[in-house]
Each structure stands twice: as C-alpha cells, then as structure tokens.
Length: 369
Image 1: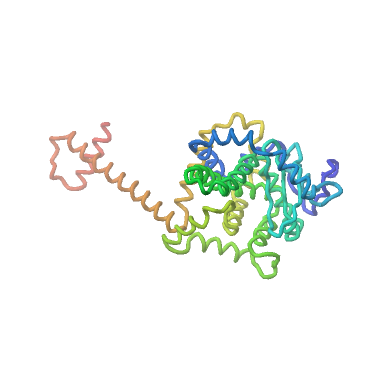
Image 2: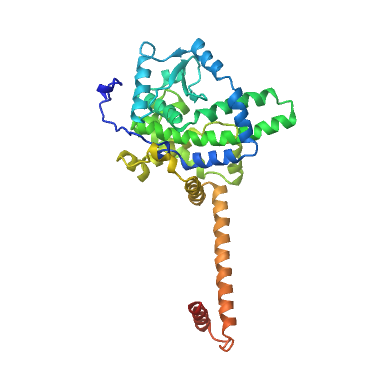
C-alpha cells in the first residue's frame, strides 16, 4: 500500500478487493427493500421530480462554508483512512469528506451526483483508530452501493413532511414514501456495516464501535458477549404485544437498533459468504450488467422466508407456525385426495380392506399414474 501513497498499513495485513461489486456485501433485505421501494406507487414520479429540484449545490456549499474539509492538511489521519478505504474497496474516485461540529456521534453519506461523507466531531472523539476505520469503510460502502441518492431524498422528504404536516392528504402521501425509504434505509445500514468490516477486517473493532454508539466511551464497563446477549434477549423476549411494540419503536428510526446491528454483523463475519470474499471469491463490478433482477429478488425472498423460519421473535414464530401448519394441512389434504382418487380408480377392489390394503391401493394408483 505504500507505493500508492495511502496510509501506512496497520501492523496486521489486510486484503484488497479489486473490482468488487457492492453485491458482494449487500444484505439481501437491502436489495429487496429497494426493489419494493421502486415499485411503490408514485415513487418514480417523486424521484424524477426531486432529482432536478434538490439543492445539491447549496448542500455542498453549506458543508464547504460551515464544516472542515478533510485533506492532507486538515484531519490528515481521517483523510488517510478515507483513501485507504477507497483503496481496499477499489472505489476509483475518493469522495469529499467533512467534519461537522455536533455533540451527537453520527456519520452520513449523501449527494445526488457525487457522494459526500460527513462525520461529526463527537464521533471522531469517541472512536479509536480501528473503530473509526470501520466507520469510514461503512460510509465508503454506502458510496459504492449508490445509497447516497436515496438517503439525500429521504432527508429532504423528512423535512418537507414537517413543513406540510398541516395539509392532511399531502402529508399522508409524503409519509408513505418516507416510511418506505426508512425501511430501506435501515436495511442499507446492515450492508454498510459489512463494507466497514471488509475495510477494517477486525470484527472486534467493529463490535467496539457499535457498543460505544450505544453506551459511550466506557469500554472498561462493557463486554461484547454481554452486548450480543442483549440482542438475543431483545429478539426472543416478551410476547406478541412486545413484538408489536418493537415494530412501533422501529418505524420512526433511520438506523436499526445497535445491538441488532452488532448481532447481524457478527453472524455475517462467521458466515461462508464472508470467508469466500476474504479468499478472493466475490462478484465483480464488470459483471453487474449481467445480473438478473429476478434472481436478486428470489434471493431476497428466500432470506426473508428463512428469517421468519429461524426467528425467535414471538410474532415471527407465530407466522412461521401458521405457515407450517398451512403447509402440513395442505399435505394432509393432498394425501387424502390422492388416496380417494386411488380408491375410485379401482372400483373392483375390496373397500373394507385394512389400512395396509388402503395404502397398497394408493400406491398402486400412484404407480399407474
């Protein structure tokens, strides 16, 4: 990495991923939520209109005039991390990055034509070098995935919804799209967390960073295993009423709950998919044009089905039990009708035969079919 002019590498070796496609790390729910978003009635119309109306030049001037632009002479350690993250994920053009004075730890990637990365002073002060590396990689992952466009529109629509709240129908129309955007936004965070891990390649640092976002700079008072146990307790705890409350608590949020993000990232870091990427086997950007939208949607649907099947949440378990019961009932009905059809096809057969004879009739009918 030294010949590229990027930051001096950490003591440990890290892999680089030439030509990596964002499909390599995107969470299936991210892709399916985006597909559903694009199918939302009126979204295309709003998107096309806003793309031309959003004051992106004004946004850039705002950060230029009232924030500190990261570079070789300002926050050089962040600039080195930014260039390093772009090098690891092979992002050709390094986005502009700003540090903004704010007591809340936060980072974002916005912009329509070109992405802009913004981190707050509180976040810079909260995280150590390796934790910050994961955050910068997270935001570069957003840039590589093209998330900044939709995130910018969400910010604009959220502000617009507040201004037109007194117009009932207008507010309902906007909030429908805002709600759908938030659902996608939350899923896109899971994708970007994975990108951050690919850049930092230190799952412990990623876990520490998420813990600090939840509990502040008190690592000596926190424990990763206990933090992950919270996520497990959150998922499986309570009854159906708690499941509904979880949904209501989540709706106004743009980010998933921190413990949930940590558990999702830990699970992915131990998966075969992550190991394959680390071994150099991943989708390339030059193959994106040949990707089947149908296959992506099918993969996303399979992920959701598996999530419902394996979830410990009471509501999801109920949905899974109902689906399983319906499938079992369907199987029994099919067997009943198959047996009945077999009996009708052999009228000369003794209908008072024992169960073994009945099974033989059904097998014989099936064999003839």
